[in-house]
Amino acid sequence: MSSKAEIHAAVDERRSEIVDFLREFVSIETENPMGYKYREGAEFLADAMVERGYDVETVEVPEELVAEHYPNRTAHERVNVLGRKTGDLAGPDVHFTGHFDVVPAGEDWSYDPYDPIVKDGRVYGRGTSDMKSGIVASLFAIDALEETGVDLRGSITQSMTVDEETGGFTGLGYLVDEGYISQANTDYCVYTECFGSSRVCLGHRGVMKFHVTAHGSKAHGCMAHDGSNAVMAMNDFLARVDEYEDELHARTTDLPVTPSESRRADISATMIDAGYSENVIPDRCRATFYRVLVPDETVEAAREEIRELLADSEVATGQKFEYDEIMFAEPTIVSENGVVSETYMENILDFYDDTEPVVSPGSDDQRFVVNDAGIEECIVYGPGLLKQAHVVDEFVPVDEVLTAAKVMAASTADIMGVTE
Image (cartoon, rainbow, N blue to C red; front, side):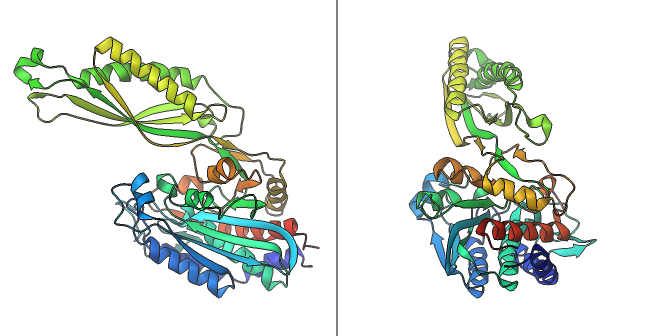
């Protein structure tokens, strides 16, 4: 048996190593889109787990499946990695999982986003908060347990996946589909996404991303009467979406979605494209939409509402409209009274005066574990800061990483029954 004080101290002793490992990890430019350097990222993680005594498997996604979800990205490999170590004693199967793809860094950084620096107790770089620090925390959490002499009961699995930023279908979704994560091999799962070390996230709102194309017929701009303007047809649909948005804002949830302004359903037009020249009446206009669902809604019901709006616009304009779905994610929620959520909240209180569970405003890969694999004992917990996700000069405080690793280590020990 080990005390939590010993476990916490074991994390602190590796502070410099944790920071160096995170910096090296962040320096690998695993940007998505398009899916660059995924193999390099997977090999870095696989090597780290081999050194730690995990049985490691690199899981490559077949090109035909990549083409199904990302037809313009088949030139880039989709490579996931999974490591498992099994103790000598019977016990639960605990699975940590996180994604190592990051959104493009973009411009205007004060620092090189892929040459991370440490300043004022923070590590700066793309992916520090979202969410390479979560993967680092879970790896070093298990290191700390072993360094204090804990004999693992059951098994520890660490999986690191790709493509979460574009839906996760060839990442964690693929691992679930292939049975790498199932009720047969996983009792408890922690998805190490960025919500800070002070709180447990129980789930997320749902989302639909889709295109709508309004049709018309071309004509010369000086003889517009000979054509039918697809932009004006789209204008009819956009006006209906505006009214629909008001209706959605009245659909709220009492669940602790953070920020509180996100405790409602929503829809936004995010892109629009039409036209060939300033003197040609356009025969097509395509708009892209982002529809957010509160946990009481379903994707199919949301689809039906969009179909009704499209049908109304077709009647009103006499033009054809097409619907093309990009991706969807059903809302996901687990109980705050589960073993894993209660255990983590208890250990968080060793570092904070109070903690309350939250629900994410956007979707993430937790849904694959809960909705598809049917594993209810799955929370989101990681050191990254939600407000730092996808921003310029992204950073993670080093103390957040250490605290999260301590909470992960102590909670795992509690779940396995190996703490004093």
